[in-house]
Image (cartoon, rainbow, N blue to C red; front, side, top):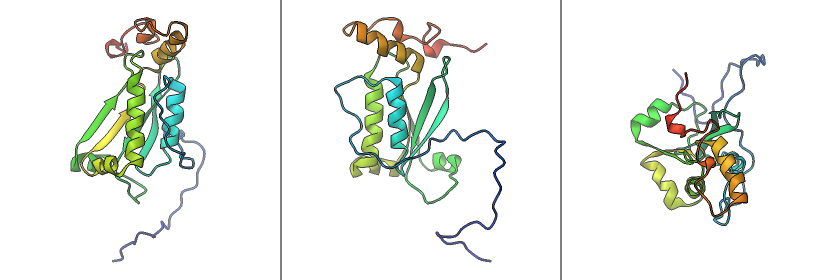
Length: 184
């Protein structure tokens, strides 16, 4: 019996055929200069996706595309957990060992501060030891823009009427509250 150490490598390689679907994981670039989130402007859905991709550079963050909106916009999610040297992580084991907190924002697309606060929380977890210590007790899943179609509409409408919040941008591309939509 032999035990592989931390620097062990696999002896088996599987040739990539190019036939499988691409991974939904966001590729991490270099660590960005912080802070990423400032409080002086509204974060639109495209900027949110850019910030999520930048945060993927930190070892505490696994960011991936969870799906697409009705109009084809990317919907990304961040999982914040304690870093591990493992290549494969068991989500079942992670969630069995400690609770997972899910925070989602912009269901109502004109409620713009939720995206800023969610992304700021991710930034603080990767940069501040006091916040990072939370990962010893909980896993954190962050969904900064639940309704990117409505968020884009609200983002554009707020440029025209910056003091008016209750407009069509609150809803989805189908003119409904995201939580009440049913796929038939």
